[in-house]
Length: 331
Length: 272
Image 1: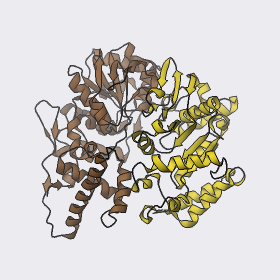
Image 2: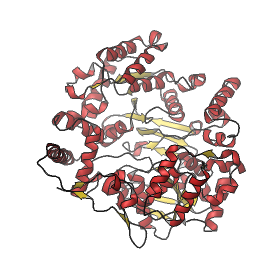
Image 3: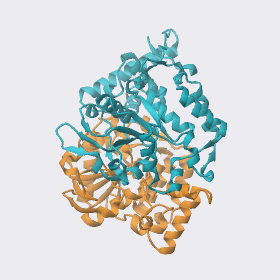
Image 4: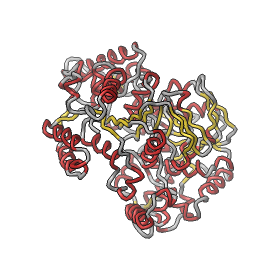
């Protein structure tokens, strides 16, 4: 039986392969064979079937379920098989790999933290068109329903898509209506990207292939990690992550912006940052230029946040973005 | 301006916690709220149901699609023209429960407004709730997990948080009633034993701290009894446990029966 082989060597993007056009990444074929003679393996096998059975019943009712609800149902229906949420989550990933489907198609609801603002018109089926530039600083909330996102009709006159790492920055840019000065679409997952936000971004990249996608992240390894997750996907999400990869470029903050930041705004890198940096460095898919930036970060031992740019005034961020875009200063 | 923005501009002076406290001090000194100083926080609350309002020229027409979630606007002072045909406001602790209600199309069968702060409610959510209560004069029911965190969130909505105590007058909502989930609901609604989770030592410590809060003595002694029962039994359980019966048990049976109890015997069965 094919299951995801969870070895540490597979846990990073290091084992991925890049295709020529740099937009897709495939995880290595890491299946393992399990002998059904060992009790543990047999149990894992049964768990997979139990989950499939439960999901099937739920889909028949035309309902959706959260992972937590699934845990309780499995706990009560098959108490010998399931004892923790983590076990349920892992079994779900095994089902995803076995059936080569997405969690969503199993009927599992996901929440979405993503929001969009800017020069984009979206229309949900049978609803009115929503203008994301009129959505105020809270933006248009991205639904967790991938089916719905798939049927969204989108129109734009923007020339660039900008992913913003942090909600506060997104809010600032949306409030200042930066998209009235520069033709952009702003999108954020408010931190670590969730599947729905990545899915919508992927759809946007397919629908508007001529629009470059750029990321505005803090100057620290975690920021680059977020960029890479949008770009390549995350191992933690299992095999479905690769579907929603996009060609994302790094707008800022970067090494050449450091001169704009006052000395006091720099903070030293913490051990966690260095851990993330090490993990990124070991990845074979990390671009050369990004690798250089990361090396500079580690070498300097410092990190800085985008808010540091406010030193030059609260409207400086818009000007900074505009200048970089005009100069095509993204890698 | 966001808190982090202010902090970064003054990094050379201090830490962010210091900035936070400084702003609180200024608010106390000037006897104003944070938003009067133009300090805003990012918003994460969601609302759905039989409600319509305007915010800075933008129309939020939740009524046209009562099962769609809308983000609660950050600039609550710009919300106006609130119109509603709801009979009550339901606060839910977690986003997953909010999603469950949306998925079950709870608002189609029940004329209400559902709000969630996605955990501990942020300031815009609390201010928005207060505004709705002031303008609409509707009863407010709160649904949280039967555990110390759920209880803490309930008290945050009702009494306000310790951190923002100086602004409690504008942020608390005394009309909030505890709808559920109670320790007694476990037997009442026939939940299997496996759904009861043991209280961890952290949970117990937390519960003991909660029991020391002043308002549990005077204002809501019934709440205290339930909390003590939880500690005594040493168990907790989550709203999702109801899904063991059917996925829509919460929407179809638990909530309607609880709300009906309130309407028939106001202030009696429900701890208010």
